[in-house]
Length: 262
Picture 1: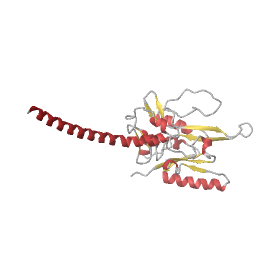
Picture 2: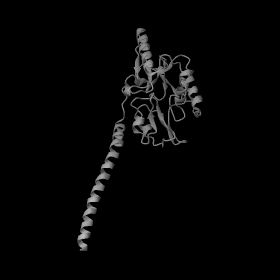
Picture 3: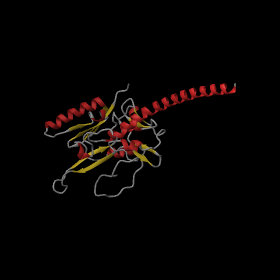
Picture 4: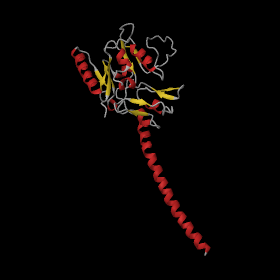
């Protein structure tokens, strides 16, 4: 079994240069989106089927009195317990041996169940292709022995890539360094949803970044997974029951017909 890969996003090192955004667009040949000035440097405003990586700009406190920017790289977090994969009815979304959550565009039907199920609002429907799309961690580059495009482009080391075990070790060391300097920090993704393959070093509360403090699979996801497992079994039992009843009825009818013919 392949060793699980991982990415570490250090919120204390990101300077919002958005080199990762450009690299993601270039490598994955994603078109630009028409946007407009909304009074923030964040652009485009959100992830989409054509934007898989985005630097989020957050103004903390009163921007005029105490200006402070904090940044977060938005992308798929490649959950171990991936809700999107659990609800996919066609099997288009699979967790690869190395932990990457991948959407097979040739199988995806665009049902949007994954869009509704994701607790991080990551997959988005592409109205041109009729499928759901998201970051695939540049799986083609990884398979050829390279880092994802975003990690290669980052000039500050805010994006690190390697095995998940190595990234978790780096996260713990970085957390200890920050705390030694009096900065409280959290490793987000170490245990959440079975462990995320994209983890964060957060110097602020997760909720300030728009992340759920304790992410959970939606209840509907659990129910849908249960139904997917139960329905085929019920259908099989119904078929067997119908066959037995029909066979018994047929035998009785045949006996009656024989009796009536005498």
